[in-house]
Length: 236
Image 1 (cartoon, helix red, strand yellow):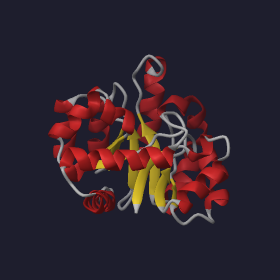
Image 2 (cartoon, helix red, strand yellow; image 1 turned 180 degrees about the horizontal axis):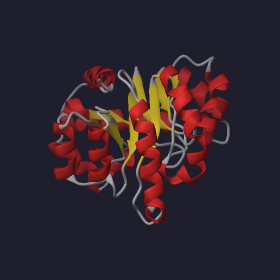
Image 3 (cartoon, rainbow, N blue to C red; image 1 turned 135 degrees about the vertical axis):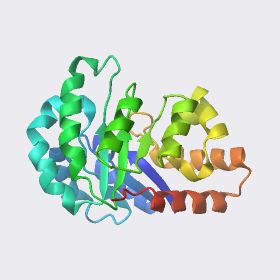
Image 4 (cartoon, rainbow, N blue to C red; image 1 turned 60 degrees about the horizontal axis):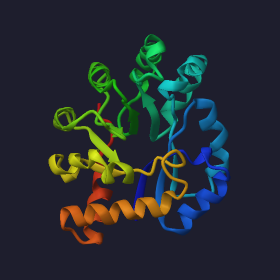
């Protein structure tokens, strides 16, 4: 089964129809959320879909709202297996409230125990994020849409972390990551609907692309990424 490790299903025009497409296509999906309230809102609607994995999120660009939902996050976290999207964003969009991002993240990271798949946002902040993850003994995690360069990626990989790449990355300059990172550290994401309105076909194309780059049959790519997904779980 193919796996989309990062998609905002609740941001599609018709989330239920999108979930049905995933299920009909025999494709699993980690549905990341922006806020705990949005996670809870989506949860009952996604229960019928066994291949959709709702993830509890606290997006760094939404923390000014999210700081009012920290207790909600902490009350839910023990019951979930998937966490995301969380992290830091020090780009022009987020640098005006970096302190709030760090405050919120420092409050939620200690609650993330063992056995969870965690998708993190790290734009222009991967070094600080890696330090915070280490300080709170959270890892390995999956760095979503990582654009911090090869050297930093290799350092993160050596610390045990994983990377979810999307079709845009694979077809642009960030394709170079594949030349340096171990295959055993790669996962696939669509980041729909922000990068694509057709996440299922986009994920399929990304699997095909990886097979061509790595010289592997499609079944081998599916097997490898399924193994990577199972290993990308936080430890004590």
